Image (cartoon, rainbow, N blue to C red; front, side, top):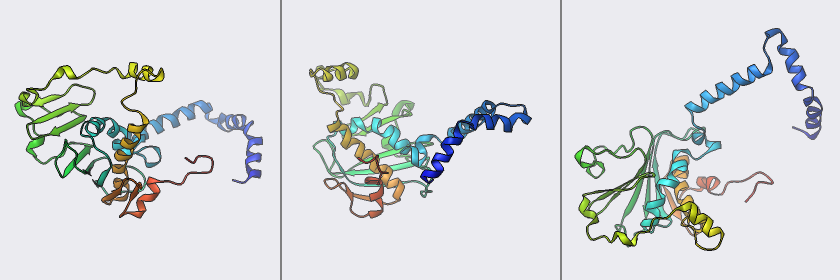
Length: 257
């Protein structure tokens, strides 16, 4: 729209409501009636396609919940940039994120992991879709939580629901663990203490920034449909130049970083 057209529209905008009312008079309804109808219709459409799954408005379920679920494994296993990321989902359609996803992250080993450590993310109906993998089947008829993480170790497993305490299989996994060494942290109080210089938050930008990068690499793999080989220090997918536009997007003038 040209500057001249913008000016002409601005001059007309003051009379828009009156003109709209005149046009609707024969219907017997007010502009608010039709506005409310449009709002209800839009709400119904968004309920079918949540805004976090529309490409222009979010990063899918992974970008929404992944940052919460991935946090504890990322910190406790001392993970850093992945070596590669690969996603399994429907073919990208250019409009919305896939509703059912499986994303694998391959990491360099740490002192807490195996030599070839892989973190797998599931979302969507039936997650995790593990095809009978015994590592993901719990004893005693116990069910995996709707949201959370599962650690599979040499001595047993730990199920960590989102916003709940962990459960261990078998209970003997905790034998010999000095629980007195663990301190309960109220993150609200910690945040206020950090503002006053009395403490440091557990999720400062130095930690949350890299964690966000890692999680969203899964969204990049979903968008490109390719296994991403990741050069962490240079923030680049070495085998997928088409990923550049998602990693370092071009912003409109005035909105750059």
